[in-house]
Image 1 (cartoon, rainbow, N blue to C red):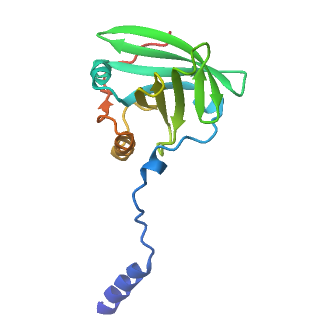
Image 2: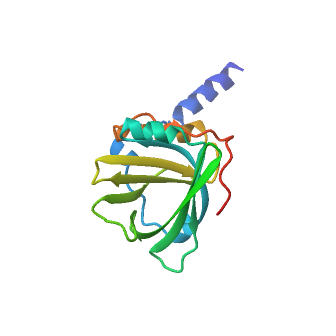
Length: 184
């Protein structure tokens, strides 16, 4: 019996340790690889977000829920999406056409010097992470969307670490029990 225990301990000591070092900020906020518009298609709920300016973050926290719905596109670089926001049981909708440029995108018909946006890498399998620089970077919006309403704790911790890397206030996490707006 003692020999079996010693052999088991020795075997465990020989197994490789799979603890990895924490990711650096450079790795955490790196842009996504070139995106396929077909990967973006469909509806995702806003799970969490942070804004660089506290007064805008306070307004953001008042939302009951929000989502984005990317529509089918015939182009490899253009796609449209509709954003919905539920606030005090009222829904508002805004539609946009965007042009993909690698991991970045531009809003068609807007002043491109005033707004830049990019998809940021996330290890969450069904998530989409968007970073928007408004007014040439004076204000940053950082949004985590998912096909699920509630994420695993590790997925939210990764997002919190990404927010921290950007020196932004702690993110607001949406209440997954609040109803989303219906598709317009």
